[in-house]
Amino acid sequence: MTTPVLNAFLSGMITCGFLIATLFFARFWSRTRDGLFLAFAAAFALLGFGQALLTLSGIPVEERSPLYLLRLAAFLLIIVAIIRKNAKA
Image 1 (cartoon, rainbow, N blue to C red):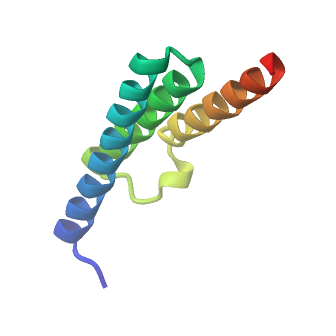
Image 2: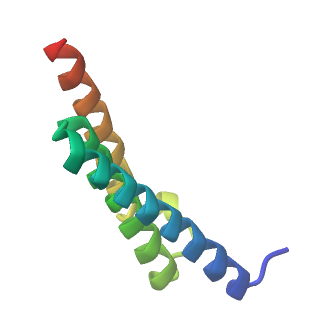
């Protein structure tokens, strides 16, 4: 059984993890200028933003909220970036 405080703490840790991944991919992009890294950085930023909004809004069931569209957009961004990267090869 989790408390609201524990849920907020864990959600904050997840958001922080997403934002750290964003910084890593942004650094890789600045070194290589590869669009795939930029797309991953943007996707992780969207995931972190969505997780933070979910926690701050207090929506009980995330699958029914419009915030779920942020997660969908992040994964679509990753898929499109991978397809574009493979099309160039």
